Image 1 (cartoon, rainbow, N blue to C red):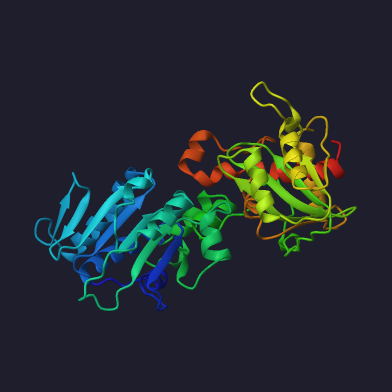
Image 2: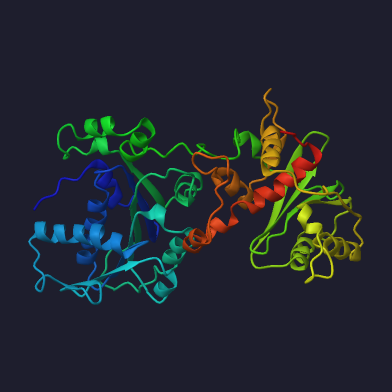
Length: 429
């Protein structure tokens, strides 16, 4: 059977660079030919490079089995391939083996550590936006199968297909904001698929609301600002900020253990400049002090500690409060230290209102700036939302964090940063 590919599918299959690794994402709406293109590429690579080992996966095996694997079988039928002759499908091993000794493994990514022993020539990812960024990085590290001397013009390939993101996730950051030359994103609106039934897209337009239609038919990323707790943040709030050892240095703290979040800042009478962050996993206050001292060993100005009022509470398990631990550690090295915290924490809505007012006031004044190196603080600004239909912040659950480790960094950095703003420029609601 002769296939006539869509323009987006052709771009997805072809490699426009000379790097040894190509990573391509086919981001399309419903019926845009995403899975079709991915499974076709997997077969073509298996036939072109005898003995290659590929991995096809998704976050759940159900998705792999019911979507991607079925697309492989449909291609085999169209190509006249016969199970047992041209290829062998093993349900017990979840593997397709071709007569040229190429093989494709079908797996879920829910336990990525079980994939660390694989050496692969290609990986196909179904619904890439559903998998954690750490899983993606691990898969990149598995592109290490030794090429056969007979393989001509071989390139390691990771190719994925997914719907557009409804919030600013790692796919957008990796393939749009910080795109490398060998990282490609191909956008494929459903409306460009000429093989769909006549009137298909018009029917979807009647069925879906405008925002849903833009994402799942026109293949446009969602409105990333919808429901965010931080409003009006823009590129104007991001700038390179120079650390000045002679100025007062503010450390504003959230004392969660995993992660602990301290944000470092300079300030004037009406502006704040966040220039660095200490966001550490599985740590203690004392160890975080050590990290600060290693980064800023020669600060000459005053160090002012702001942050969570609960960090000043004694407990039966600790001899000192968190703030006493910090002050004693810094005084030991000769720093001039002062602690400025409120006697109790205000409602979080007050802190968020104060933070938003500094980002951009009603009269347009911008008084809050963040250095790009504050990655976790920016991650919070771009992703922390209110629960739909409520004024409660949507804090990730334990199960959600277990599925996506990056989610544990939501809330703590923004808490730390907002304590400083609320202390100096509070808003009463």
